[in-house]
Image 1 (tube, helix red, strand yellow):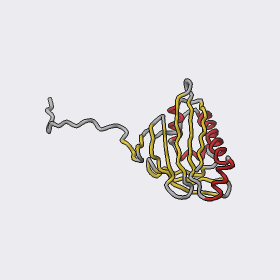
Image 2 (cartoon, helix red, strand yellow):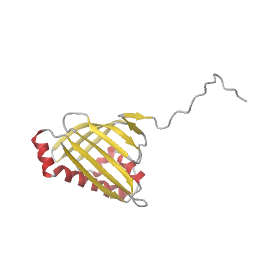
Image 3 (cartoon, helix red, strand yellow):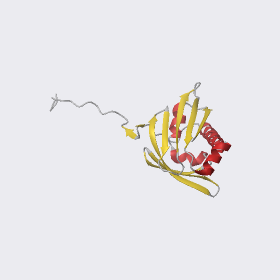
Image 4 (tube, one colour):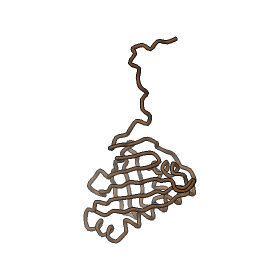
Length: 172
């Protein structure tokens, strides 16, 4: 298993960086290795990644997500086995840091070679840099998903108000 951690500071507020990150279908607009992302459910995504003629497909489950702070995922299949997290922290006024941590669960010689050579780390660094360029150039998010996920389950956005135990509340 190999671990990668990369951090970038972006010139947008933390909520803008976080909101854009939740727009997975937009990843191909700024990440060169991401070809397509489909949001199947709030906690399940389907990815197509690759370079040149090489393609890989996998599903990822979002296991934890807290608005403006944190998102963690894990792939669901044996191929492209990995897990990771992205953390959002306020830096200076209208700036934030984005930290990506990934763990690659290597399968086969090609994955071990890529990890050992630094190819994966370089790819994560470049793609995070492209996110920075994109969000700073646009200056605002293209959308947002502000829900929370805990233990892989989508949490209600707003708690239901308490219900009265009185069968018929008097009116008037």
